[in-house]
Amino acid sequence: MALSSGMLKSVVENGTVTGWDAGASSYGHSPLNLIIVPLFCGTLKVINLATTFSPVDYLSSGRSITWGDLDMAIAHIIILLGGVFAIIGIVLFTRRELAASQSQSL
Image (tube, rainbow, N blue to C red):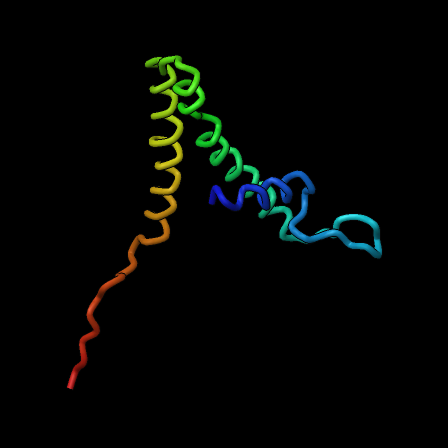
C-alpha cells in the first residue's frame, strides 16, 4: 500500500481515476469517482500517518525520542494502521473456510 501512495495521491489531487483526455484537454470523469476517490483519500491519510513518524531523524541528529513521540508512534502505526488492516481482514475472511476439506460421498 505504501508503495502505491504516489498513485493514490495523484488520484486524490486530480479527483478522478481516469487519465488525461487529450481531446477534451482535461481529466476524464467516471461514475466510479464517487466511490474510489473518497476511499483513496482515506487510505492516503492512514498511510501518511505511518510515514510522517521518522525516529531516524531524531537519532541521526543525536536527539532522544521522547515518550510522547513513542506513544504517538504506537497509537498511529500499531493501533490505528494495524487496526484498519485487521478490520479489513476480519471482514474479508468472516465465514470463509480457507482450508476446508472436501468430502466425497460415495
